[in-house]
Image (cartoon, rainbow, N blue to C red; front, side):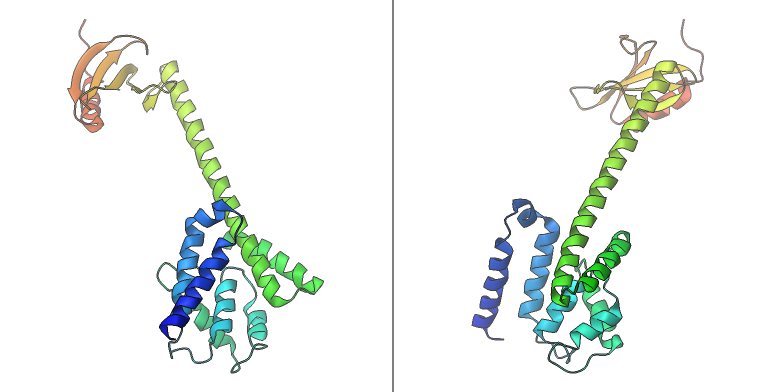
Length: 245
């Protein structure tokens, strides 16, 4: 491929990408990675290692990589395109090579498998042509992955919030617990052996450790430490020693 041809291909891919009306889509790191991979594979597709694969076959196989289309159906569809007859092994191994490319991100997500196969069966039943099915499945799989990722993040945040509230309740009830903030405070609080402690950040980026009775108490200063780990070692020791009267 000559330089002017490579430039034309890159220009075509960029123009197609910028046609998206969604700013979110344009800024999506996964979509940017996909565009970069497509540009590289388009301008460097002259490798003689895969003799049966021209541009059309290669693009369609890459587009279908994450869509869970049954490989037998994929072989049949690719063999309808011009070129030497492809076997199941041809398609499976070319797909594996694409997926194993660095930063390819082309492995299908197991979480969307059943939904993709159901949509595929429905589109086949409706008589949709294979190229359109691949595009529809690609969009569906991408959106489902984003939705599932959002749900996972929301679940993680909810679990973190529940854990924080449980720790806060334990501290306020006087039960032993690890460090926890109270009502968004910069300080963190701990109970150990029934004794309450507060660890507060200082202006010098150190940690001041106080023995307290209540969260609002000024408390008794036990020391100032460079790291929370040092304060933990002190608490491990003094929490079981007699307290000064």
